[in-house]
Image (cartoon, rainbow, N blue to C red):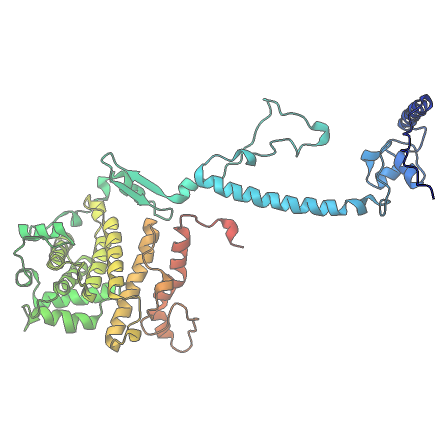
Length: 484
């Protein structure tokens, strides 16, 4: 068999007739389009679907099928399901919805990120920068005379708080929850109309006590003052001590429970009074003597039977003696339970003494600092851990619980007042409430209504106030949209 021929086939060379045929087709197509535009022929889409066309522009059929943009010369590609435009565009609408939701999420994230660094809106967040939301008939480039509306993000500077810096460099910060009275402390422009003369007088005490008071809470390097001197020269008489004790219990017990009647009558007074005469029976813990002095100072200040004008002088004398007693032993080294109690009560005294209204030291700042110092020392003593788990006696455990939760309440409220972070954090606390129960327990009043009422302030502070402080004072506070 002869081999197959491998001669290549010749390519067809376009002839003059082919060019004339192609030109004729283009001319015919243009004429058809012109006829459709003039309404002389059915539109292309109706012709493809072989349906009746009213030869209007757009025709009724294209309007009904929502393909007005195709009429009269455009048409959908021939294929399965193309008789219904909705069937062909349903996946597109679904994709558009997904992209729209994604754009909203990205715009929200960009807005939050921009607010952390600037108060000006991000350029990409300007309303409708490309005129996409304008109607098609009015679309066009924006002119200089068109008003531009810019929605500014929330002013996060106000949310952060207020920082005041003096010419000398001293600074003071108040958070967003701080009260309006803090502005008076920043400006340091107190009117003389608010000055109370009962607190403006200060008793004259020996220079040695004044030096110790100025060094509070640290112990001076050179001091000859001792507990015997303070007890013999500055404690009141036995009758006056009993009166101040009753006044303290009556006026402060509903609010501050860390020092009980039993502790005062059975521990503090017997330690420094023998047969009704001031006398030192123990010298190991000068902070216990300071606690007795600050109890007398608070009682003298709050005693309703005290003569006007003399309450401030007597109370300030006991106050300075308490600070001097505390300085006899450093509060930083091996603190006692009485150390926590005396620092807490000193903050109470400063809060009610009104020193800032008398033009003296800022009592709110001092109160906050004393509470924070007491809270840190409470961590040193492990008061945030329950005593029973540590093997302590029941009476010591009960006192530790009362001291801790009384201090916890003071800490969270002081933090909200000053707008500063709280010291205690609930995840690290397992100390039980006085009388039993913990912050994680579900509350059931049951038959022990008295026990529930006794611990109500502690429960409210731990379950509500602490959570509000933690969220409101955070560096990135929650927005209103966080809550349903």
